[in-house]
Image (cartoon, rainbow, N blue to C red; front, side):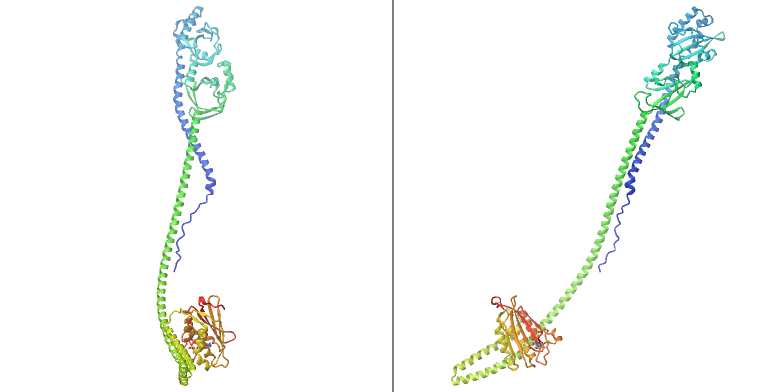
Length: 630
Ligand code: ADP
């Protein structure tokens, strides 16, 4: 009937093992954050470096051209002297007068050109005239034949030379030109130029730059500490050669000591210097170094661009990338968690809905089952009611039949009972007539009283017949002793035929039952006992009564008869059950007696004493006011 709905179980809310997530995720995130940070740093640094290189190239070009123009400004100056007649004269004829004239000329020329000094050498390298002829450290008369610029110029090549003056100890750029007179070189004109203005210009432009000469020696530098340092390694021979040339006077030529150098492209390097070389720096200083060769000279112009700002910026970008990634990761994790929560909620809701559906299905099934069984029950109830009605009707008919039967039996019994009083009445009445005739009025009077009493009893017997037929609830009252007396009197005829030892052992009591009905019950019980004991010689009948504690009275009618056979015991109170032959028994006596007792609120039951015989126990309610103690 009730079927267990085999609904599929809701999908289990699986929880994935989170070990990986729990333990590795933070490390992974940290690594990724660091990776992103480093990547951001590298990208920013790369891009920044490229921009710096481009900007640097433009700067390099610009300032290299500045240097070139500064140098080329004076290239023509030594050759100018060739045009000056006094110079040729002096070279041909070096008299004091000619010298003096040329000195003046050179002094004026030097002043106008803004150079450091202009002077004239003869072919042996001796200074014939000079613009600084009046100064204490004048070159006049000095032998400068060892100077490379002289050697170049005297051989007809332009002499270009950066060096430190042997007289003044002052650095300068020397330009020399071989003066031709009459087809041959008769002397050498030299111009010394100071180029510090370039350095000042770089400084003003906050530019870090230097110029290195053909020997790799830094001759001009915005940073004074780099001056006269060698940008490439110098061999001992080189050092010795340079020392001998006195090109750098007596300066000790040291190589610079960069911490590291990484070539980044053609003419581009990354270079870093140890801290301390620059005031206030405690960290190594890194530069982007771009070098370009200057035209017309074997010199190189180098631009240094500090990478500190770029690095700082790249670091900031790296940090930003790391923070950005961390934020993104955080948002991703938060989003993922939220997605999982929603998924779990949805799964739970789905499971709930499924459970709900299954429940509703089961409820519907059960309701249907219940409705069916309810219908079934209703039908059964209807059937039972019908059966009950049928039974009640049968019972009613039965009761009616039994009443009629009792009436029949009682009428026989009454007729029988009435015969004796009627006979006695006839005797008494005829005796009374005789006593009246004899004038014995007192005897006649007592006879008449006995007659009246007998007539009353006979009336009551007929009344009981009526009472049976009415069969109403009993609300009457009876005196036990009177009822016993009446019953004995009714059965007087039988008792005289079948003598019985009657033992009365009961306290009198007022019982809540109609007097005649109580008499009728007693008549039935005593008559049955008489019937049972009929064949035997010793007949004992006990009437034993006692008040119960619960407001009832118990009267036991016991005989020493043969008792009731086992198979008959369960049928005793059934209507029409009798063991008596012929018309002697109707099987209604006990049934009616029990029904009379029940109608009065009491009961009738049977017991089988061990000593033998039969005992009927009549329970009847006591009249409340007249309760008699036991
Ligand atoms: P009836 O007397 O007409 O047979 P009852 O209902 O009065 O009907 O009695 C039913 C039967 O119970 C009797 O036939 C008898 O067998 C048995 N019975 C009743 N009283 C006694 C008794 N005191 N001793 C033995 N049997 C009894």
